Image (cartoon, rainbow, N blue to C red; front, side, top):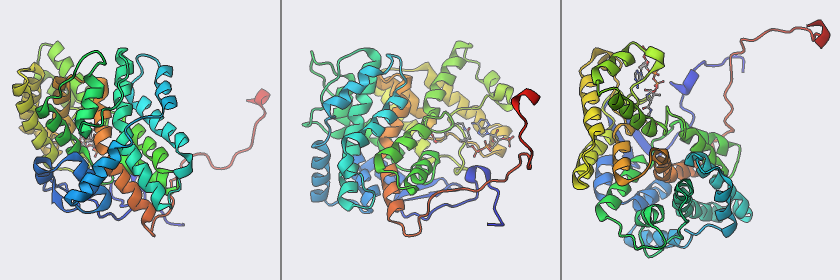
Length: 392
Ligand code: CMC
């Protein structure tokens, strides 16, 4: 009190200490629990990385099997929760549907919400990881008017999600293993990113001792913004607009540089990375591979690569250290897989789930945690007297 630091956007303020994720933004380095993102993306699996983030170590084979089996047991949604999906408008964006359903989970498990009860936190962790793919696929099915599919627990985590999303009850659905592996890898890349906007939101809500479900629901809502997770959807829209305008990439870059109508190059720039986002490098390669494998050449990929090329050679972007971020190429892969743009940020949320959980658990167990409560600089009126309505 008496002295406050003014730091809009927390650009220079650390609000916690953490052992989970390390970023060196100048060098373009990202590590989860010390492991380089490149190694995890290539060699690990999403559930293994989830375990690593949440429990701090890579699981043994037996631990991974036990973790996977527990998640498998909890993929079903309560039938009453299934009915929630009928209440939303047909064209509802799936992000608020997801956050509503995650909040609603807390009403179905009211006897296990104590943030300080180890068993409660454990079962909530498993329920979240298990049920969120089911919720996400139901939000999608609802938007296209198709029947909801129950989970098939003989399938892997990502395979099950793909089948619930793209399968129909009347026909068999063969999951393409290359697509499943690519989506699993993209989930790994999104799994944590230290104190970003949504994770900070999860921690702040949790610092008031809000339960795991409601804290994470707050994070889903923060993620939906176009400057954060919503950027992957915004990138595709931007690429589509450029294409519709005749593919004049140079003209678009000029508009960005002149800050016309506040237009930004979506999928570029990052608060922490002042170098190439290491995730973007992996995604760029995957985008090329997946599109080639699916024999789905996409003119938007050419536009994206041309945009990158021009931006990286232009002083506006170079002097501001603006490079492609993780969202720049992901949308092109999701599109090729058959997801509509509305689902892109939901996929980000599925990937970020273990990071939010790990960060919330670290926060709740940290003896230094205090309720998040920033200060302000008051710049309004000083004291003035009330005036009755008839005299105003
Ligand atoms: N296009 C054009 N100019 C930009 C961009 C961009 N994408 N990003 C930053 N700038 C400019 C900005 O106008 C400012 O210039 P000036 O000094 O002339 O005013 C300078 O670069 C610094 O930008 P800032 O807004 O102060 O930077 P920030 O750290 O507050 O914002 C950001 C970071 C990611 C919100 C921002 O770069 C941005 O809006 N990018 C586009 C949206 C996007 O791709 N978001 C995804 C982020 S990565 C993963 C995720 O969270 O989803």
